[in-house]
Image 1 (cartoon, rainbow, N blue to C red):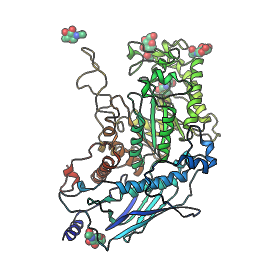
Image 2 (image 1 turned 90 degrees about the vertical axis):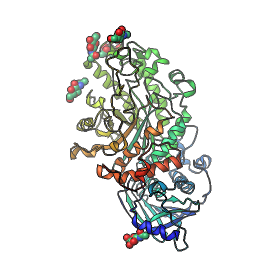
Image 3 (image 1 turned 135 degrees about the vertical axis):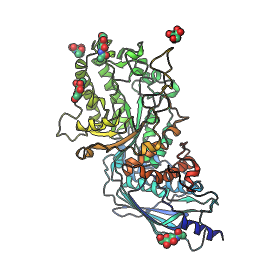
Length: 605
Ligand SMILES: *[C@@H]1O[C@H](CO)[C@@H](O)[C@H](O)[C@H]1NC(C)=O
Ligand SMILES: *[C@@H]1O[C@H](CO)[C@@H](O)[C@H](O)[C@H]1NC(C)=O
Ligand SMILES: *[C@@H]1O[C@H](CO)[C@@H](O)[C@H](O)[C@H]1NC(C)=O
Ligand SMILES: *[C@@H]1O[C@H](CO)[C@@H](O)[C@H](O)[C@H]1NC(C)=O
Ligand SMILES: *[C@@H]1O[C@H](CO)[C@@H](O)[C@H](O)[C@H]1NC(C)=O
């Protein structure tokens, strides 16, 4: 009786695959197929070598460092820290194990997406098909093997097929495509509330997928407030589940310098908010490896030459207008202070900083961000190496410093990234000097407003979008300033500069291509959502970042969305959010009230 009722209701209720982000193409039916709890995942790469992943019950999610180190000697050249790097093959095998474990231990029962008290779950039945084996075939057409980090740049195209009789196949273009496919595969299955099974109600399933943009990022500021490694790892987990692939860590700013630079230990010892809140070299190594294992390239921003007051706690002689008052003459956010612009001591400092940092990041990422936003000119009136606030005087000094640092970054095989001001306000020459050189070229990140994207593109730079009027996650939470008595600038209702809050629907329908001429569109690398941390710390970060960054992630993966997509998105994003909260411990905010998600009636207005 119960079985019959479940089937009848399934006839009436339209269902969709609860996938986030939406694949480019998908088809599905309505047959239930169960996933056997110890289904084997086979992993075969071309040239074919069928190797079973046997260590199914291992709770072990990391890599077997010692074994890899002994087995794969060629990787030793990538070894810059105290720990070895795994091979790409090992990364993928671990990801397969992790996915198996995540599916098996999932507690996500999607009651919230069916009318109240509906018996929506299938009743296990001898005739139902069971998946006993999942075959993963990787075409290996696109594996850059020079450095392990480059596997993230491979083709991300994949297909998933699950037949009505329980045959399951994943076909992928490369190792990174296998990782992306596993995330999709996981989202196809639900746990039965009886605890007795894992199923999809949607067989047969056919998915063909590929990303719209290859750069799908999140920028997280760890300077204005302090964040711990586990906070960023949890964020990487959530990013990976939305197929985001770049974690931009805004590592330092005027307020604090939390990043240890072992060749200059006083920098973080004095510049961090507390000696206990320093990211050690090994914390950084672990975080980057954690990201790499999940297909997320973690890269650092050291914002230069503005936003550098915190260097002054250790090296006051390098910083002009350090802690000068009134601060608003010298900066947009206290405290004031910028590194001196024409000082050989500053150049020595920058060389030492880059020589220390670049070898520790280059095994993991192709990128290094040198900032360049919100330069204050009056600071250079007090800088004895400049003594001027004239932009004509400052521009060549800025050009020289940026080129100097970028050349070091290029020499380390990395791609420099800068904020838009360097290109559109300062008109700097940012490309590498010899156009014939095959060294990687700069990326420019537009941020102030949507219109800036086009301005950067018109300068001919490869461009990252994600402007303050669309993809800033901190907007609308209010100004961090307290009002002076009778202040005329900080007034009720104490709004921040980019208020109001950008809710998930607003972020979802931001169209990066709007107003961008067709011939410039190929220069768009992709985009980033931004989490500046004046008003954020680890306690509230999950709810501020998620699910809104996931809304941006679907734009980046699937392509621009319109308001017509929102209704369906609310169910799919709703499912993503429940999985994040229930299975990943990510305290994501609410997508919509339960009544709407339950499909009892329309919530359209
Ligand atoms: C399943 O799909 C088939 C083909 O579209 C349809 O004829 C059938 O009524 C559906 N069955 C249920 C239980 O929804
Ligand atoms: C920069 O410093 C050099 C050497 O100290 C000096 O000759 C030059 O005038 C300075 N440039 C500016 C613009 O102050
Ligand atoms: C430059 O400094 C002078 C004072 O020396 C000030 O009057 C002027 O407003 C400043 N210019 C800028 C662009 O801040
Ligand atoms: C850069 O160019 C823009 C227009 O192209 C101009 O308005 C601006 O003043 C220039 N800035 C500098 C520092 O030369
Ligand atoms: C603020 O304004 C009130 C009323 O205009 C005035 O009485 C008071 O002295 C002012 N306070 C300060 C600190 O300027």
